Length: 119
Image 1 (cartoon, helix red, strand yellow):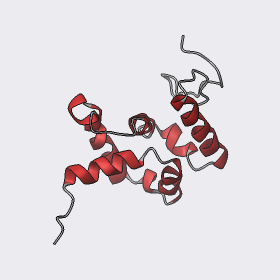
Image 2: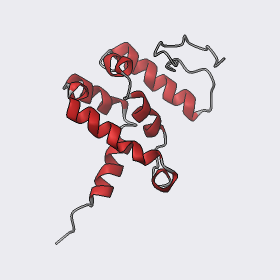
Image 3: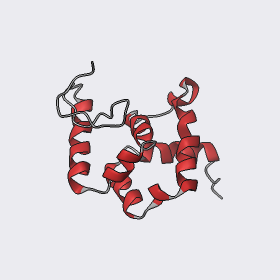
C-alpha cells in the first residue's frame, strides 16, 4: 500500500500550483478567493518564503503570486480574461528576465502602467 503524502508535500504542491494562471482563474471564478478561511490559508502558506522552505520550490514565481494574492486588487482582477492574459505575458517576460512587466502593484495598491520602472 502506498503512503499518503505528508502535509508538507501537499502544501508544497499547492503553493507551486499557484504558478498556474488557469488554476488561479478557477479559484477566483469559484469564489475561493472570497472565503476568509481560504485567505487565511494563503496567509499561513507564507512560511514557504523562508529560505529553509523556499529551497524546495521549483516554480519560484508561485511565491510572487502568493504575495499578489494577499491584495484585494489582484483577487478582484484575476477573474478578468484580459488580466489573465496580461499576467501570463508578464510571467513569460519574467522568465526571459525582462524589466518590461505590466502588472506590478505599487505600495498604495495601484497598478503601475506597462513599462513603468520602480522609482
